[in-house]
Every structure is written in structure tokens, then in C-alpha cells.
Length: 158
Length: 214
Picture 1 (cartoon, rainbow over the protein chains, first blue to last red):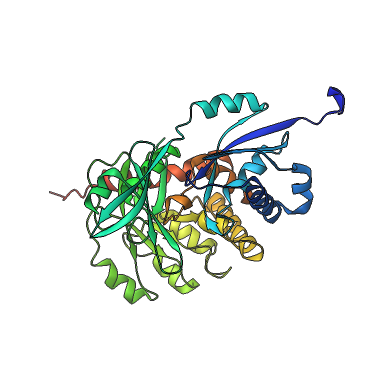
Picture 2: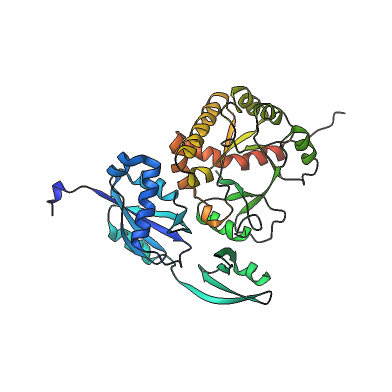
């Protein structure tokens, strides 16, 4: 390990994943972030940025980059539209020089959800409720699943 | 300053309901959004402005489409070729010209921009192509937006920023909009002005009253 004066300064980004209930592997997230960074900024800047996914939880992950490159990494992260072939969105919600500060922030995040079956028009749909009123409906198609994003009120109408 | 997402497409155009999209908008730092929706439900957490996109490739079709516009809507139109754009910016009631990234490089020039500036018409900067496209296609979009920014700085024509989202997964926040717009050289204050533009446009329109002479 390098002595402190030789170590490179880092910045950490706390990123929320949407939909939060979807299980993600750190390798898949890392390759999505790296692809977005390389595509947007090119190999040269992506190399200087050194984007790494440090830890992955349910509904969030922490990414790391060199200090001064966090704006570029946040921009690249905002251009991720699919992860492992599934449509997703990443939203940077906090940045810090230490992971500890971000872990404190994670403790305040609402990261609980419940799965249930919703009866709609004689059909049973899988649904996930989180953040109070948000409801994601999972429609099973012949070839693939389709997601619909509603709230409590609209799901009653469905 | 009130920040407005200048265009969202809720269900059934997209996969997310208007109420859900408005909750996301609030979490992302917006105070209001322009929705291309027929019906706006009650008890929405942010202010929703009703938008109407005129359909048609020719001026004749656009004029015909403009006759059926409901009252109080923010009127938008898709940019087309140069001749159409020159006609659009002279058309009565148009407030936002969208899709500037799709048109050819010469379809919008300083003359079109000057007309737009005189009539208070804004050009929309849609974030969706910056997010979704990759490679040369994205570079072309950045080029168009850089040109629009130059025209805006020189002629004073307004810019608006929209996510063009059809899903909550396509919505981007105020901070992300600032970062994405910095890709083509837009400063933070310019981004904030552009985000505030739709609200100002509606307020200005409502302020104007025709007073009949005695």
C-alpha cells in the first residue's frame, strides 16, 4: 500500500438505481458505467477518471473516481439507460470524499418495498410498492416483461 | 425561479402515469412540468402545464391542426426543413419549437433564430437524444445544440430544456440537466434560465390583455 502522500485523492458518488427492487450484480453495473463513461468521454478521459463500483446494495451503489472528475462521472452515469439488457436508470444523489459520509446518507434512504399481487380486469399482475405511494406493475408478456409505473390512486382505478 | 421540464409524455404514450411522473419531477428538483396529456388529474404534487404538439409536415397541415387546440395550452411544434421553420416562427401562437436535433444543419439559421427572438418563441433542447444515443449520432446532436446555443446568445432567442421522457426511467433531474447541457458549452445560469423559460412564457402570455379603444 502506498504511503498517504503518494495515494491519489478519490471522490465517491452515491447512485440510486431505478427500479430499486431489481437485483443487480456489481460486475454488470461496473461494465454499464464504464461503457457510458468511455462512450461519452473517450478512452483518454475514462482512463484518468478511473471509474470503479465500490459497493452495491439493493436500490443503490457507490462509485469511485479520481478527485476533480466526479462531474464527468456523474454525467456519464446519467446516460446509462440499460443494464444487462434491462431498462434502468441511475441517479446520482450525493457525492463525498469518504464512503463513511455516503453510508450515513444511505441509512436515511427509504429502501424498503413489498411485492403483492394486484387483481386488474380479471387478471393477476405482480406489483411492487415502495416510497409510500409508488407502485410498479409487472406485466408478463409472451416474449418479455413490461413495466408500468403508477401510484396507489391509479392502481385502484386499474 | 421555477424550474419546468418542458415536455413529458405520460401514459398512454409512455409507461408511467402523469401522477407518478410528477412525483419523480418533484424529487428531481422541478417545480412544474409540461405534459402532453389530454386530461390532467387533480391532486398532482407539482404544477402541470398542459402542452399541445401540433402535427403536420406542411404549413397547411399545421394551421389546420392549430385550429383544434384547447385553450390554455403551451403550443409546440416539431421543426422541419428551412422553409417550414421560417414559416413556423411567423405563425401565431407558437411558443416552443421542438426536435431541432433531428433537422439538417441548415434548417435553423440566424434569420429563423432572430424571428423566434422577436416573437418570443423558444427552441427546445431535449435531453433524451443526449442520453440514449451513442457515437456519431450523439456527436451530431451536440453539434446542433451548440449551434442553437450560439444563436440564442447572439439573437436572444429563448431556449427551453425538456427530458422528453415517456417513462420515469427517462426522466433526468435539474443537476443532471446542468451536467448534460455543459457537454455543448451551456453555462449553469443559462441552464437555469432555460428551465425557467416555459413558466415565464405562460405568465407573459397571460399578462397580455387586448384592450379595446374607446
